[in-house]
Image (cartoon, rainbow, N blue to C red):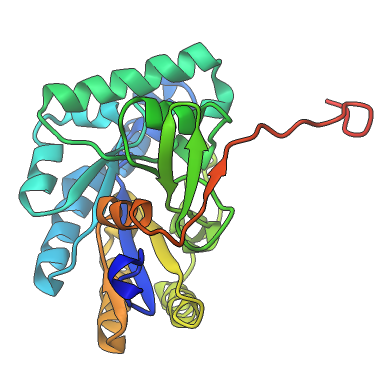
Length: 289
């Protein structure tokens, strides 16, 4: 029944998510990049210019969004998270340092996760969800999310609709992502460190995203768009984001929602089965390390 379904009767649900990484993904490649002023300015464009423009656009079109913010970024810019919340949007956890969990030990991942949580607690920001840096979760990550009382993760790719995961610490909703709905693969470019090498026309990107949203309506999917303010906050690219939102609104059967609201609906949906998290066991004789 639609009143208890995660989608609420919509043909598709769209979550506009913004990863406010600022300098953190570059510093995660090496602290020496802090001395590269041009590179640091390239990343600072996100919170300095991109975020305010994005917030104004969201106000104008009256759609909600979720901003995934690393704890380090929130710490460096103390008013940033509060300003996002004041505009009616959600702030979610995106690690502390933006170091991928797959590059850390279990203890290091826990310490980074909890340090990020502590930053938001100190700033009075309510956190409901998490996204792993680089979407590079380990088998320990969902359990950390549940253990710390969060309701959802948004880092995995096993479906194009929400699904529920049973961890040893409780049940969470997974709001899946995909590389085709991430602006990093379309726009990210730096000579050093090499984070990407293609700068695609926003016209082509808009065409791809519109086609995906339209097709998802036939399968009642979650259109989980991942944008970075230092990339999509630029004028021509933000114009494409505007056109995409206007397209979605014009369809009449697409609902825009914050991630926390989609997760709450998914967790309350009796039609969604909960899948136990089972670590994949690989025979080293078949697949050597």
